[in-house]
Amino acid sequence: MRFIFIGPPGAGKGTQAIRVAEMLQIPHISTGDILRQHVSEQTSLGQQAKVYMDRGELVPDQLILDMVQYRLEQADTSRGWILDGFPRNVPQAIFVEKLLSSTSTEGALKVINLDAPDDEVVKRLLARGRRDDTEDTIRRRLQVYREQTTPLIEFYNSRQQLCQIDGSLSMDEVTTQLKQAVAAV
Ligand code: AP5
Image (tube, rainbow, N blue to C red; front, side):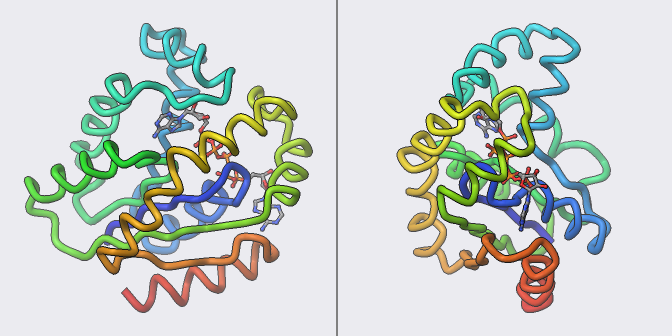
């Protein structure tokens, strides 16, 4: 069981990925969380990544790909995983495809596109107040999402791996829809 959660900032990827991961007993792997851990530990990666994260830009692929590969090689991923916030551009998606074709893990890849309108996600993120949840940075993250991440919708749709979920519903309603989508895999 392998799932990728994509969607704009604030659509609820992290919230829902945690719930589905617990239900399926597979790890929830959030590149944002791993990066924030590096930032708080002031590792070399964290110091480099922080500059981009504070601006709402994507951290360069050369910093991200080794980090993801290392995480996906850990023993707890043998039954599958949920990737939250990765891939975020076409080169990262191609990296996942190559990685999967070189491993023997069984099971289909399903990509959940959790979408919600800009006004809704801005409201949610301003209420959350994470370091990168300022109005300017949220707008930049949304712009980066539109420019670099939305091409993945067609990328995965053309591979018949995409599942659309309405992230503007209540948290529990979204979870109900996700449970149905996951059961259909
Ligand atoms: P990342 O941590 O991935 O942030 P993001 O994609 O902007 O996502 P968020 O965490 O803001 O939103 P979410 O969709 O997970 O929503 P959540 O469940 O938290 O990335 C941060 C930065 O790291 C990037 O900008 C980039 O710099 C870097 N980065 C990360 N991955 C990278 C990669 N692959 N390549 C390059 N750079 C990378 O919910 C948000 C809020 O809404 C919460 O308060 C929640 O309680 C609330 N909420 C959730 N669902 C609902 C609902 N249905 N109704 C009402 N409220 C809700």
